[in-house]
Image 1 (cartoon, rainbow, N blue to C red):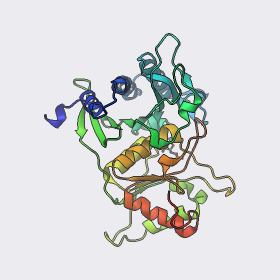
Image 2 (cartoon, helix red, strand yellow; image 1 turned 45 degrees about the vertical axis):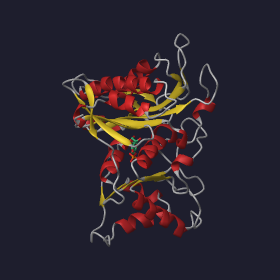
Image 3 (cartoon, helix red, strand yellow; image 1 turned 180 degrees about the vertical axis):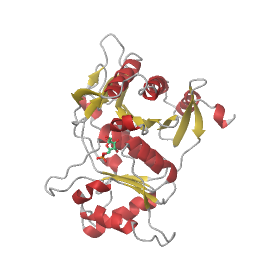
Image 4 (cartoon, rainbow, N blue to C red; image 1 turned 60 degrees about the vertical axis):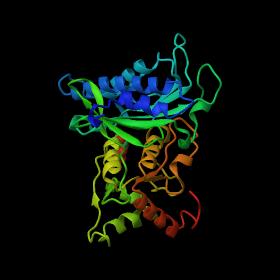
Length: 345
Ligand code: P6P
């Protein structure tokens, strides 16, 4: 069948059929999520016209100012996902606590962890922003999901992906069988297969980091970035810096073109390193995607997908991208002693 005539619904169904024990629950969950994303996409695209820019005046758990579009995205996703019977609970960047499924609706075997509208500080500048999601299978028996169901390793995810609201609206997702991208065709309101198996190049030519934070970087990061600014032996030129400050946009470019994205901890106070990005609904799903696309994702001292979450809004440093680029970063970590030589990540 023509690639461009495969909808995301058909693709999810075909992915499900590869799992013998599949019951259609994950398929239903992902379908509901794509519907929510179409509504969010419409709201993001009309924000400037409908006067829904601006802040709500609230702050979220991570201290970020909540934009009105964040709020709209949060409500839209919640209302699309609360009644399908696929979930036992939800976790959102916009909510300090677990989000239960209303008593009137059946509980399912999955949990959804999501950032409803990441990068929203860029909305007024019309920069691409996105929704990030991660799906785990519950480990508690039945009824309402619990904190125990949420505090997991990224390696246990059953699905992960993001919606990118940019020049076009896309979904990029994986269920552990590779990474696939679909572009919304507004004329029919369907996500159509546009990236049939995204594979990240083994080495790239871009690095992506907020250079404004350089004063707080640790030694491996400082040395690594300095190394990238020298002429690369293979290409005879340094890497180029590309940093948008919108995680979904920066990661999508890294996934498709290759290279490396870094958000290391602020080590201005070496005794109290401060990471920024959240493990459960930002770093772990992006790391699952990157590994599924043939890349790598580490915190600097270990593989991201091996990190055990200890709280809902647990923050970790992240270095992810092309396998060779991440391996070079790891070498700087070993040389600086932050990671003992030969330590398995
Ligand atoms: P900084 C956006 O607020 C966000 O959470 C991510 O989308 C983005 O990668 C990061 O923060 C940008 O942070 O400190 O560079 O502005």
